[in-house]
Length: 235
Image (cartoon, rainbow, N blue to C red; front, side, top):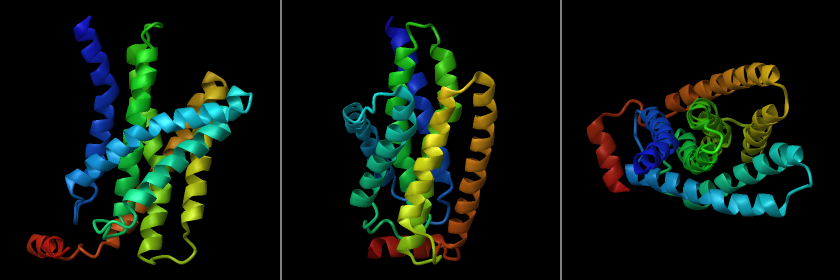
């Protein structure tokens, strides 16, 4: 019994940690301090609980509307508020890519706790491995791909890189993409498969493009390790 519990916890938590490790590796020129990544992840985890309370309070009388409208808006809003309060004005947010790194870290913290709830609820249906596998490949990356849209916008806006990009537009895009992903839960199995494939492919293409753009915009791109360490100590 105890070993089964440990196995389920690992199935719930490890995917989020693996994903955040992969995201962290994309911050190649001036990686954020690990303590900041841990902070973002933990704050994202705690955001799940007010999200549940608010979504229940705003339940519109329809599960479909709750999933497609209320959940995406509240979840992205809470993640975005954490980002703006704790990270946007922080001195470690010193290059455009950091917006995506912190947004993804917060989102993966949120998705990891959400994952724990879903995997444990699958015990009674004996679908733990199926649920854990699907969520590790779809729902967890979905969360950070959504939030990366406003994270990208934050990096661009903070450093004044591209006129026309706004935080509002980035946030709206994240909510819409999140809503579209959740919409798949309300249609047929075939429809879900097709829609998720198209939506996920689009999200990954946009995410990869944004990563490359902001990596190219890094002011640390052409500095050596010694200079980067000097800059960090100066801060």
